[in-house]
Image (cartoon, rainbow, N blue to C red; front, top):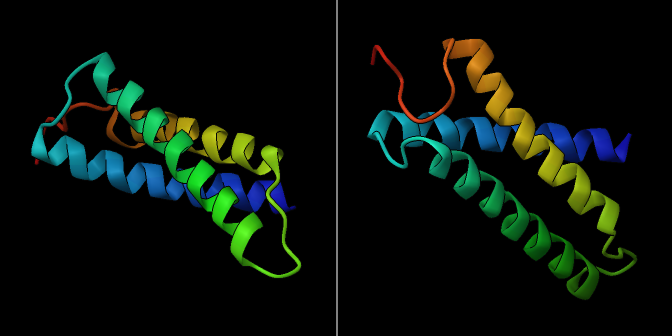
Length: 93
């Protein structure tokens, strides 16, 4: 269940960021997905390192990072499903 929650949280984060970037018309084309997934990897890694180093009784789990990145990738599919096009631009603002 922990991995599902990680993926869900990152999917919502990624979708929110995708909508914000699309409305600003940032990163057209493939650069959009590359930057989003890259940020998901960086953000997930930082969260896992901080969790392992600063929280008593918690450890960093590499599978949590995999779930975070999977959730970020899921955000791209959610964007396509909601707006009918791949992230990069929203046709009607």
